[in-house]
Image (cartoon, rainbow, N blue to C red; front, side, top):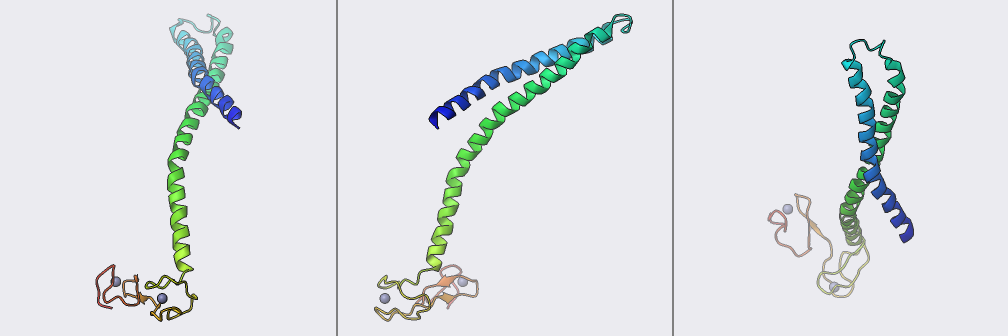
Length: 154
Ligand SMILES: [Zn+2]
Ligand SMILES: [Zn+2]
């Protein structure tokens, strides 16, 4: 895998150099034909058609060159984006996992014993387990006097 990555990076390194060069050479070839066309007093007598393959090769080269440049540099951008996305993604996954864990637990806030999900009182200490849901939608502990989110009396 490491070898593959190194080889992959080398290809990208080469493309980063060869891509722009190919693009420039292609544009130069095409450009030289293009400008000679306008510089000629009588382009058709000056055998413009003999230069046509050069223009064609120039277009092909610049297309290949820009494709290589895009591939080499876009790949880098995508890689950096992926590197930045990884911590965010794992953070989101962790948050989702935490909220799922909370949903599946009916832990007694007093003695921290896990009770059945439908239990209203702790089977260890008798503490009331039903959450108090405020009008704002926040779940508060069963003994809360005020909502922890909005401060409304419960
Ligand atoms: Zn308890
Ligand atoms: Zn509230």
